[in-house]
Length: 257
Ligand SMILES: C[S@@+](CC[C@H](N)C(=O)[O-])C[C@H]1O[C@@H](n2cnc3c(N)ncnc32)[C@H](O)[C@@H]1O
Image (cartoon, rainbow, N blue to C red; front, side, top):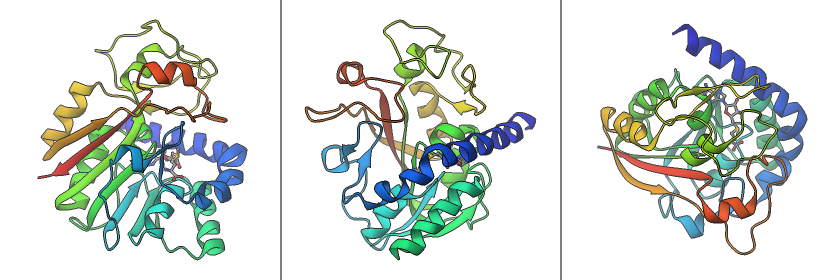
């Protein structure tokens, strides 16, 4: 339990700094995008089809909503979105954008490990590099299961197993083609020089955890950047040529039975 408390505080510090350096300044551009995009190569949802075809009228919770651009794309399509995030600076940017755009979203300051919202109150739970990477999966997956109504859908994006295995220790260097660490030891990871703590699970461990919490896995998407994709401008842990050959990111789709 102590480890979890430490990781939440470390990740709030990490995201307070990232907000100052990048996400606050980038929020207008991200919120304004007309389509729904996935991951560092901005792959359109229309190509992947990880989300329900229609989200209008759905109650949606975004776990680790950050500046809430992802939630805003769903809200613009008629979803009632609640964004949950423990970092006040990220929520302050989200609030500024709500005021600027008039797009309505509810915001709740909390970690995804412990969400102060009622059981069975959402149809869809999403996480785009939010809880999916920064919260302890053994605590946030049960929370997602609790928050979803029976039949509700969980969709989350995170780094691929292969990226975790091939990324050099320093967050400053790009992933390569050599396996650098053990897959069987995957869980909590603090990269050299980083203040934040990430969580990575192997595919087998994700499936076991999802099933233990009453989910059925419907899909594991491994997005491949297309011909017009460009190298990421900020989150540049992987380059385009690498990502055209191997999955850099993965999107899990699981239904609450
Ligand atoms: C890459 S950002 C998410 C971006 C988001 N999809 C958006 O639309 O802006 C990662 C977010 O995860 C949040 N985070 C960190 N620890 C968390 C935790 N324990 N539970 C939920 N979110 C967490 C950070 O505060 C940060 O805002």
